Image (cartoon, rainbow, N blue to C red; front, side):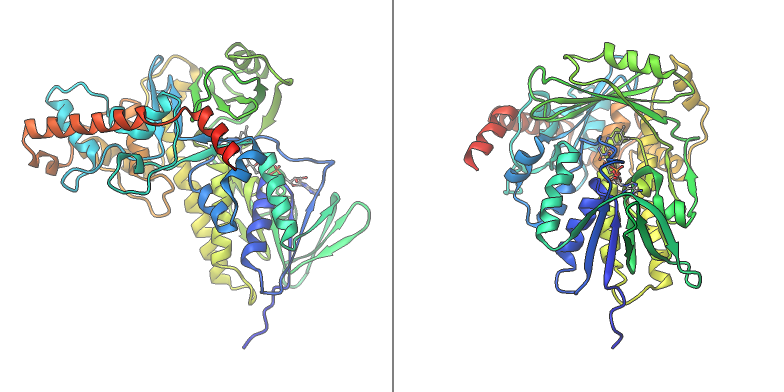
Length: 501
Ligand code: FAD
């Protein structure tokens, strides 16, 4: 039997990516005699944004054994049932992309096909009225999903809106308690092994040298090891997703506590609003070719609904991904691996993907070239799937009221997205993607929400008589409405859960 070759792992960076990786490694590598060290620099700091998450994060926390109430208290979290999109299909439109399905399937056919048929028969009900998470979000109500699968209250998932810096601090406590060593210091140099091309060690400003067998680069946009030392290269996707800047500002809490994030389309980008327990996160993601920094900031400030709690902060990024997420003995996770604008709250999820894939292919017995190829294949697909879904929001639109929207009208789409839209338009079919993060209900939400109406639907939806279908649909709407009436106010629910803990 070969001796395990990986004895020391060094994580470079202590942002959300670094501490999520550290916590997961501490949990999974327990018992393998592998020492994990994390280096971070308070002088450099973290990106300091990132508040909206996806339901999958609950599985990550569960694996670590994290208690939800502890997490919510530590990170000022609120619950999230989906994302509200305003002004995307056209100015004045709004829809919610819910974390859940529309109605129960009828005769084995997803309910939206039946709704399309009802609509063709003249029915005017909204598809939203068949979705528990949408109707609950619209009324600022929240409850945990029911365990009984025959109840409409079981047909959804939920995520959190939280302060990602506090989440990182929370995971730091977990990781350190589980054996991870933290070093404070700024890395100023990297030494490569001439023969293998591996990173041998990093040197801190005070002269300390840290060697490891495997390095996880979580150093943020700079990609200190993956790019700085190993020149992985970057696939720039700005020609598809040209937004390259953001300005962010927190405001005081205002109005009812929404269990959803809001993304409002603007002339040269879009604005986010994310309610946490103690404040609201706001920001404007925009494209610098279509608006100046000053105008982007002005547009953000003019559209805030409460007093600012700090000065607006600028951020710059280039949409895309590393050519190799894993090169030699360095794996890049988080912003070091790539970045896609936070329109669907996917960045923290992509960190989770990076960690999950690394654990699945963990090189504890040494490096295997085929594992590295497989890791890069999987991560490339994870990023491409998200890219396509984000791009859908910009191209499934009637908007042409500014240079940015006209830019999207003339765009040549990636084949993967073009094929998906074509299959939808003819028969309302959502072609599944390998490694597709977003399942059919998410695509349906955005396509219908942005008025991309198909010309057909699943022929099996015709198996029911008109009156029987109308009666079934009415019963589902009433079930959703009654379930939401019995669902607590979101803010009360959080207060009561905290008191119960
Ligand atoms: P960082 O937070 O930048 O951390 C990098 C770490 O590396 C720091 O600890 C730093 O000190 C360390 N480091 C760097 N260089 C050195 C060095 N030389 N020596 C020692 N240490 C070093 N994600 C979501 O999921 N939801 C959102 O709503 C969301 N909104 C966003 C909005 C914007 C405008 C942006 C830009 C991002 C958003 N994200 C969002 C992404 C999210 O913020 C990041 O994915 C997440 O914070 C992870 O960042 P990171 O840990 O990779 O990098």
